[in-house]
Length: 448
Image 1 (tube, rainbow, N blue to C red):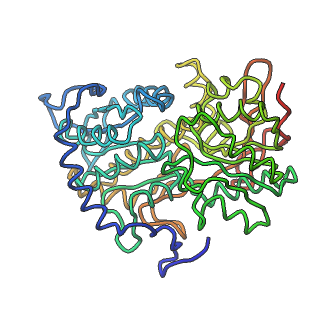
Image 2: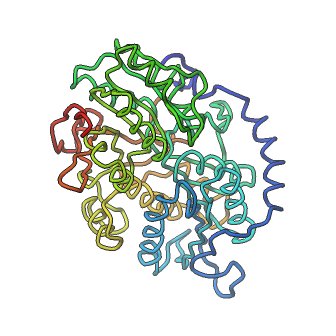
């Protein structure tokens, strides 16, 4: 990565508005959010915040139960039910065992509602920790509300640069209450470059949405444009990204065809990828690879593409092939995938491992906390060293990442159509040699 600081963190991670200004602004926003109506939010799971009885550990969870990101709720509902069973005997904090309650709130796939969901967990449900995943549009506003209201928060399922920069992160003033584990753009770039080299690709086109994830992908210091350092040519027609729900990508496709683009990369929502894919057929554009993040996370979204989903490439953050086990049950990644399939009748998805790992990290941190005081829990999260289903998680332990971040690994994947089903297979493991390769990478087949 270009640039750097005295702490070994790239200059890019401190870019943007100074963190202290953003946090002051968010304090006012947080006050307003607390007063906002909570109608339509998912009721708390496991009991009421006013219930009598012994002190309980209260875990809050924000999920996109409704809206454009609702696919995540299928995984999240399974994980919450699983954790209610696994934690039925309680968790140890400061040498004492406490019963556990899990409270769930719906972000409605909306940034503003995600912030309201977080404040409801904090002030109505009075949770001890907030957990959240489901892309930057959910993780960022939730983490912001937790930081300004001084409540421990652990998040995932968003590129760490998106989570950090999108919140005005400052390496000289780390966050005190909020922590994040996931891969970074450096891992995406390395994984994509490795796959494109396998296919002899040298010319790449970038399409990205005008959101936090899109801005991370398009960042010239650490995003996809850094592929130029690896002798790739990049074509990026738009300067600010497209709006979600765009009806036409003709400008992009025309530019890609004129530049002889061999691979297209982006981080769209599934509906936008479907629109783009239809128009590649209309405009007779068949690159060697379509390499997309986020939109290819769920098998159901790939199925919706029909035959044009065959051969699409993406990163894989977790899979049944990953050689890691649950710290709560010692079950393997394959066991988790099979259990999910058996319970929900759906194929595994990468977010399954990370949603599960959120609770693993939380339980590990609680076990290291001196008490249930929020300050004690935050201090324990900061020092946590957890072996999870997605691999080791230790915040601030790796070079070139902020103290609030734990960076995880990636491998390369490709969707393979067999009859009317799709399977996501590992095709490049240069990012983590412990993960076995499932199949040979192939070029994107022409549309049928």
